[in-house]
Image (cartoon, rainbow, N blue to C red; front, top):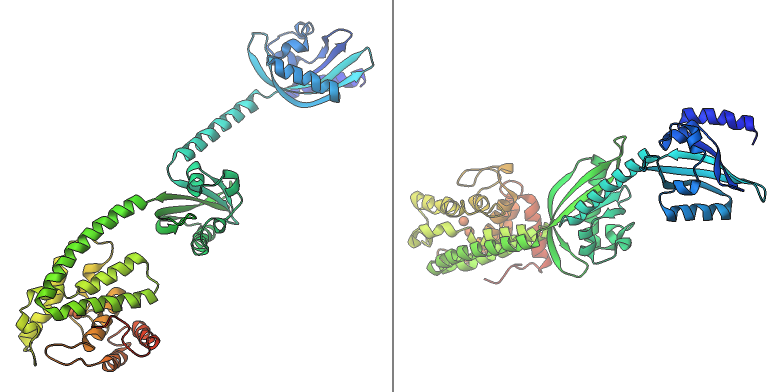
Length: 449
Ligand SMILES: [Fe+2]
Ligand SMILES: [Fe+2]
């Protein structure tokens, strides 16, 4: 390198904030040329002060120094070597050295640049600190947290997630839910992820039953949100899933206690009027069979079963001689019987169920065309549970013996449903009932009464 060129570089480099140097390695060790910026960086006001320094002594870390000179000896050049230098006042400065060795056998020089990277290092340390803080936070939260890319591949998970699957972190990254969960479950998870990716809307607090790889099941509550890049583009999803199994078990125990209490009540009714015992069981069976065709979850199935068991509980307040009176009822007697619906509603309306039990029972004598009682509700005013219960009730009553009449038979009951399909009765449910009968060789598909 010509001397003139080097001078030009020196003045330019001062403006760029880069330290420039030529250092003699042999025969003696000293700085031959430096720019003002290098002196300034290390706290020296004069370039001349710098000339007496030895490069070895500038290294604060002896190990770094050894690696630096070893690499140089081997490769004759070194690129962006990061280390700390001793400043004039004893302080330290993060620098990056890029240098090449030149010269002959007995005259060796080192030429290169030294950059102040303290700001860069500070930023890096700050980022690392933030990263550690975030990771610490993620790992200490007792919920499964996971990040997925647009292709639904898992890109990051926390410790709780790893422990839950009982696998190694490396075995999870890059995989999808299909690698760990049943196809059904993974499909549901995929649908949720895609919903978030495609709409940008979060899914908040979704309750799910999951079967884990070891066969145990859990109830979880999941929230999924979209992840954005700096330009506001959705780049993936973040999910957090909390295990609610213990809580769900408690809830279940509470519910079981309630159900037991109500079952006692219905037993009282059954002791009083033995005909209702079979009736309630059968209605519950029919309603459950219909609901299963509709693909309801276990909780909703339990609700409709319970509604079937308890729907006529209000008859407990009606005199037996009216309830089982042979022959025609007077208007007053008929109105009294109708009151069983409201009576039952009043008994259970304040009991807190995770399904609409009281309302289902309240509506079980309503008809879609408004010809039912007690509120003469119509169409959308009648909930699906009550539509199912109504049809189950008619089907069971007509096929059973009553003290005031013989059993009318399945054929007549089916005729009633067919005639009322679309007017009094929900046509979809009537269709399901017809299919259930057909699948059972045209016979009753519930317990023998
Ligand atoms: Fe009833
Ligand atoms: Fe009934």
